[in-house]
Image (cartoon, rainbow, N blue to C red; front, side, top):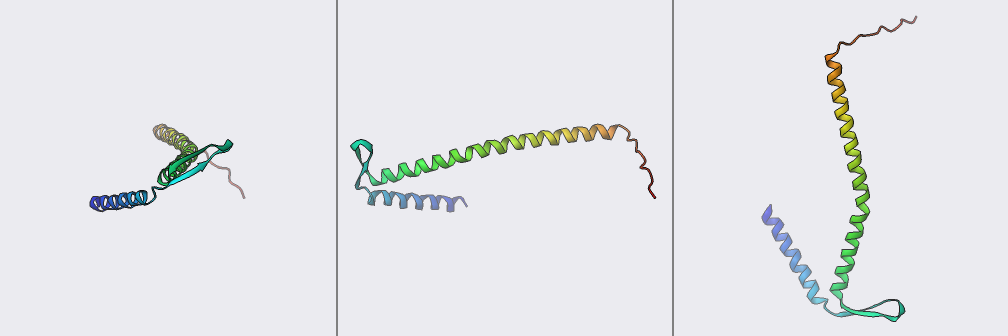
Length: 102
């Protein structure tokens, strides 16, 4: 399985490297107030991809923290319930009789 993964990674690297070599043309990025930058196209694509990935990670970070807090709360409830079950198993249980209805 490792050989397949390394082969896939190598193939992906060479595809992206070829993409970078083929797209080395300069592009103009126009900003406000007449400012402009000239950058290689592959650099612009890489920055856009990185910004999108960071935005996605940031967007999921809040829900990840919320889920971890919920998991911690549920684990504490389970521990409390098991502790209560152990203490109730050692104490005798007095059963109350329900009144009979006709």
